[in-house]
Each structure stands twice: as C-alpha cells, then as structure tokens.
Image (cartoon, rainbow, N blue to C red):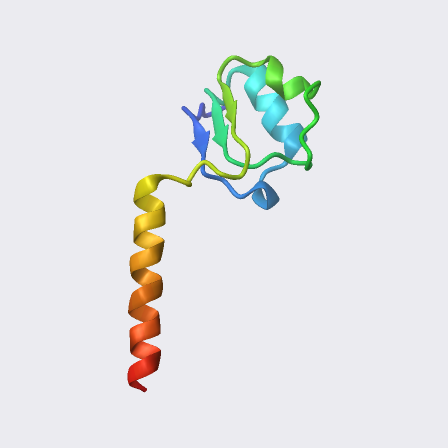
Length: 85
C-alpha cells in the first residue's frame, strides 16, 4: 500500500475519522495537521490525540496579523468598487 507523508489543510467533511485513525496507527499516514476538529467542542479524550504526529488547532489557525491586514485591504477594495458603481 502506498504511504502518504502527511495530511494537512483538509476540510473535515472530506476526512473519514476512522480511516484517518487507521492510517495513522498503521503508519501509512505520516501525520495530520488540521485547524478544525471532527466535533465541536473537541473531546480532549479523543483517541486521535495519542499520536505525537497530529496537530489540531481551534478553527483560528489562519488568524494572523498578516491575514487581518489582507482581509482589511480586500474589504476596503470591495467597498470602494461598490461605491464607484
């Protein structure tokens, strides 16, 4: 079976929790990084957290100073465009 190095930035709706657990356990998935859990709020006793190669952040991983500046700039551009019309 083909081994996959790492899964990341996958929408949770596209991930099969049982399959992810299986492939992490078998070593066919080298790790997983997602910024949203399968259930909200996330269960701190979820077995997937036993893997040291799993990183799950609350749904704020993309919130940075840069992202806020970019969103603000884009919002302003859209507002100016609407005002011109």
